[in-house]
Image (cartoon, rainbow, N blue to C red):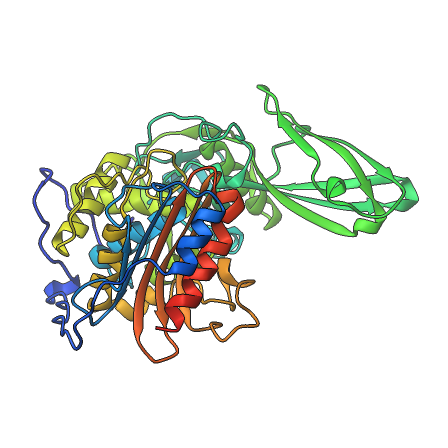
Amino acid sequence: MIKKYCAIGVVFLGISSAWAENGAAVPKPAESVIVRAQETQELPESIRDYLKKKKVGDSDVGIFVQDVNADRPLLAYNAGLPLNPASTMKLLSTWSALKVLGPSWVWDTEAWTRGSIRDGRLDGDLVLRGYGDPFLVDETLWLFVHELRARGLEEISGDIIIDNSFFEVPPASPGAFDGHPDKVYNAIPSALMFNFQATRFLFRADEPRQAVRVEAFPDPGPGKLVNQMKLVSGNCSRSHYNPSVSRGTDGVVVVRGNYTADCGQQSFMRLLTPPAEHAFNAFRDDWQALGGRFSGRMRTGTVGDGDQLFYKVSSRTLLEQIRLINKWSNNVMVRALLLSLGAREFGAPGTPDKGRLAVLQALQSAGIDTTGLVVDNGSGLSRAARITPAQLGTLLLAVWHEPYMPEFLSSLPLLGEDGTLVRRFRRSDLRSRARFKTGTLNKVTALAGYMLTRSGKRMVVVILHNGDSVNRAGRPLQDMLLEWVFEQ
């Protein structure tokens, strides 16, 4: 189960009290010391002219810039305008989790036995119980299964039961956002979530047989992977390693497309199977690959009173996971994090409503006005999410004085160096001088984080841009703003 146990009881709608392991006091934020009075400036003429040239609407863009040690913004343009933040919304979710759970928080994944074990044979079912690890990936699951084998378990005579009860997520199609239910960024979290709910397909040419080999992990099951790929001649192009994949109601997965030997070996990820089936398939594959025997079926259920805990594995720490979330903007990881946060604050099962309330509480406890704020699923993959540049900027200013500020900053992409900013400003003096969370949707682009200016000032910078003008002006406008701030 979750390492630091969830509080069970009545939902408390006020500001939750500080909590730390072994009853230790939670570190208090540093006092804000204002070292310079800041005069708020008008929007720079060069940026104003660019907005006019590109026909950017008056309410399309909001900007907030402030020195972390100043008493007011350096620049505030439409700073109170609610806008869609895209993935910069992840800043709220990850900071709230860091503040409430702490950087060393971990999630457990458990194996419970239902029945006795004799001579390596479990006469009954094995229950796999998840507590929301956002990063339960191939390596972790393999080690988990290996440890079951190492502890003497050789055969499961009954069924494998998947226990996803720690989260309660309303039924929804993964394609509800944009009509692409197979895209990994649309994954919906579950308590026992394997590999971001994605199936990995591996392709390679078999020239002697004039065929294309296709492997899937997890395997959808015996006889359920139908390979209709064709080996063709010519140079490799994007169409050759982006085949179509479909799954019927009978669970049969059909892979179609053309492939050339020039492509070598390629792989891609797709959402195909429901969460419980996906976790079962992955466990079954690893279990059998490591010599374990099993001939039962998958069922869903919960751990019962008479079941015995056989083994549990702990996840990477929250600090490690928010680095993965923010640097690479992983949607399903942060959505799972939101559910965990809700379960911690208001008791299991974790729900989106509890998670949203937990985020609002964390923000309010830091003195941030949450009026009009719409968190939605916490990832920014949303058309409903709203926040003002001033709210986001105020959060970043508050974080600067929090005890976990260094941990939080280390999770953000470093300009020109890594994550979603690896290709920006690589040949500029700005390289490595800023840490920003990026956000991108159709007709939405956003940037929020911190910059060390040429003169040595630490600036919070937020720019949210919505509307049709994003496609013609979004990235250049961000670059102009960053270059201007750098010279302040």
